[in-house]
Image 1 (spheres, one colour):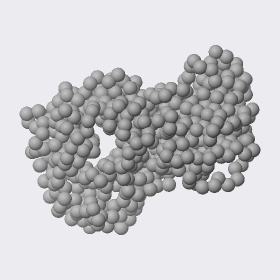
Image 2: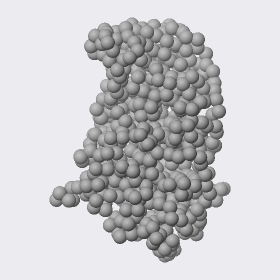
Image 3: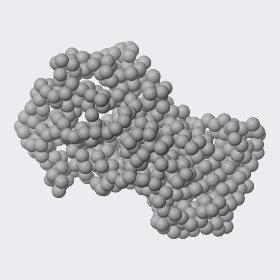
Image 4: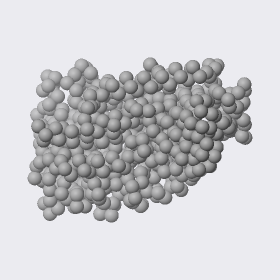
Length: 607
C-alpha cells in the first residue's frame, strides 16, 4: 500500500450526500460522513498513520492494477492482476429510487475473480473526527461494530470470509477462485445503528442493479451529442456526485487540505458551496438538459438572498455549508501530517469572510438563466433580487479581495467590476422580461458607469490587455470570462490583444496560470501549478474568437491530463501531476462549457 498515492490515482463514488475516494490499489482513503462537509472517518490521504482507511487489496505484492467506471455510471471497478489470476473490487454507494438514503450511508465493496485464483486482503481502520476521536470495536455474530462518539460504523461481510479483530480495527483474508465472489458492506449511522438486515448476495445484486439503473436513467436526460461525449458525460456525473441532494447545493471539491504545492501552505478546505462556482454551473447544467438540478440550486441560491443587508453589512458571503449554514471557521488540524508532509491541514475556510463583489453578478447571472424565473421565485423572490440590486447600485465601487481569495489585501479587481456590470445588465433585462417594478434608471446608470470605468481603468494601453486590478500591469486568467458573460464581443480588438498577452505570459503548452504571484503578491508563500479551470476557459475563449485550430488542440491536450477515470483536480503541476483538492467541480463544469463552445463553433464552420 502506497504511503502517499498520487492525488490523481483515485476514483470517486458517492450517494449524493457524501462521497469517498478509492485508489487504484483498492484503498478507500477519504470519506466524510454524514455529509461532504462533515468530519472524516477515513482520511489516510492526509495522514497514512493517523487518518484511517478501508482497504481491499491483493494479498500478493506486485499485483498490476487498473481502474475504470462501468460506462455512464458512478460504479467503480478496480482490477487486480496477479500471477495466479485476475480479480476485481466493485465499489459503489447505493442510491435506489430515492437518490440518497435518509438516515444512513452504505459503501458496498464486492470482490470477485474473473480468471484463475486471487487472494484478497481486507483491513478496515476507521478514525472518527479527522482522527481526533477514538472508537470501540465490538465483534458480534460476524459483524464488526465500530462505536465512535456520535456515530457507529457497521461492517458486514458475505461469502467465505471471516472478520478478525486487529486491536480496535478488523482484518480478513479470503482466496477466491474463478466466478466466486464475496462482499464487504460498511454502513454508517448517526448514533446506534438499530437492527441491520442480513447481508445476502441477492440483496447486494439488487442494490447494484438499482444504482446502475439510476445513473443510466439520469444520464439519459443529457442533450449532449457532441464530439467529446465520454469526457462530457463523465464530467456531468462527477458534478452530480458532488451535489448535496437535499438542498441542490454543489461542493467545490470533496476533499480538504490537499496541497497546491507539495510541501507548501496552500492547503484549503473545498467541501463547501461557493456561490460563484455553483452559479456558473447553472449554465452547464441547463445546456446539457439538467433543468431539475439547475432549478434546485437556484432555489437554494435564492434562499440565501435576504430582504436586506445582513448584520455584517453584506447581503451574501462567498461560500456556505451545503445546508446554507454561513459558519465556516477556519481551523488547523495540527495532529495530521498532511499529504506528502504538506502542512498545515486546514478545515473550515477563512475566505468565507472575504469581500468578493463578483459574486453578485454570478448570482443574478444564475437566477436569470431560465425563462420561467418569475414562476420559480415568485414575487417575494423578485423583491429580494430587486433589493439586492438596489443595494449594489450604491456599493459596487469598492476594493475587494477578488475571485482568487488572495490574502494580500483589497484592490480594485477588474473582474469584480465586470461581474457587477453583469448583475445590472441581467437585472434590467429580467425586469423588462417579466414586467416587474424596478429602478431600471438607477440600474442602467450603474451599469453604464461600471462599463466606462472598466474600459478606462481596467485596460492597459501599454500592455494592450485588460489587467487584474486598476493601476496594475498584471494579467489575470479570470478575465477569460469577459466574453462569455457578454461584457465584450469575443472578437473585439481589445479582447483579442488581451488573449495574445495571456498567451505570451500565462500560457504554457496550453496550460494556463491564474496570474503571476511574483508580479502580484497574494500574501502566501510558495507557488502553484497551472489552474485547470483557466485552461478550459482559455479553450472556450479561443473557440469564440474563431481560433478553432488552436482551441481544439488545446482542448485535446487538456484531456490528456485527466486521470485514468476522467477526473481532474484543481491544478496541473510542472511534470503533469494533479495538484490541489480533488475532484474539482469548477474544472469539470469548465470542461463542459469548453466542449459545448467548441462543438458550436466547429458546427458553424462546417456548415
